[in-house]
Amino acid sequence: MRISVNERGAERLLGRHLWVFRRDVVSGPEEPGLFPVYFGRRFLALALYNPQSDLTVRAYRFQEGEPEEALLENLKRALKRREKALEEEPEGGFRLVHAEGDFLPGLVVDSYAGHLVLQATAYAWEGLLPRVVEVLKPYAKSLLAKNDAPTRTLEGLPLYVRPLLGEVPPRVEVKEGGIRYLVDLLEGQKTGAFLDQRDNRILMERFRGERALDVFSYMGGFALHLALGFKEVLAVDSSKAALERAEENARLNGLSLKTLEANAFDLLRALEKAGERFDLIVLDPPAFAKGKKDLERAYRAYKEVNLRAMRLLKEGGILATASCSHHLTEPLFYEMLKEAAQDARRAFRILEKRGQGWDHPVLLNHPETHYLKFALLQMA
Image (cartoon, rainbow, N blue to C red; front, side, top):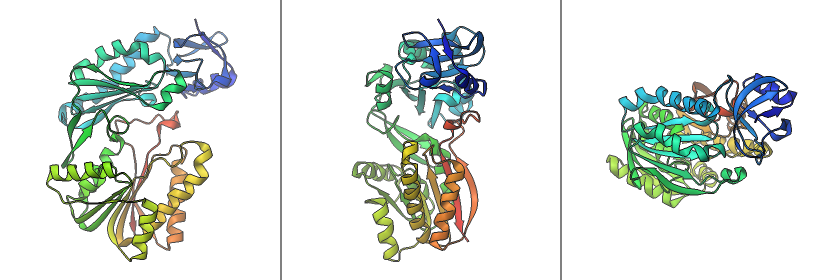
């Protein structure tokens, strides 16, 4: 059995993009699975396939071979690339499998001090989970399947959370740079935490000052690192539960942290009106643009929150600002920051252009893998 695609679908795969949508699939099996993809008689790729999904074809290998073994070989290669980091930082948090970035579409695996959390969002992975568990076993103290992502319903998959290996602890302590934080494996967002910002959070330990502000703080990730070098750190989030966890993490590290439950936009306006000033501000908002249709509204929201933060900085102050919206591309991100700086009547120099951590690899041919933008700016 094979998948046949039209010329447009073939061009995408020949260009090494991994996705082909339903409109470009000519024919294929009735059931989901792993199959070779052809354009006429020409072999193009091996792919995960689901005729129920609009994202019908997800390629993972551009050479012929046995489909299941080739996919598992990609998994072994991804793990091999992380082995040194796991050996050097056994108590750290790392992404072991980054879906398309590791030629493993629809599969994410994160490690929290050796306790693994797996999320599979492509249909073909479901039947392969026993073999996946065997490959992951040498790296795992425990393994949790956190398959509760709503996108699974688009694939015709059930939502569930259950252990696959060992005894899964409800909470795990993770070491990150100079701090430790607690991860709730069962109830936390995503797989428990946001590991893509790990290196950017550790970067905050380089700065010293009087006052720092962490907006959209969640469990205090950036704020904890800032508290190592600032006399006063304020962590702001709209979730009371997240801020309670931030306070708990602060106590775990013997650090002082102020928290405030508030709407970020309202608070930034209120702080500006009150004449407050900070040496360093972090903005790590959620994805304002979930899809292309949201981009215009999201652009305005990103600009507003950055403009307000810029006006709250002391002269020479630092703005560490991010966007995890794929549809807000890197050029658009920096255009938005330029417009915000112009409207704020402030001049900024770019200290660093950063992104997601090395364990969240970006494929040049598959731009969807590059989603996190992170700018370090200084008011001139």
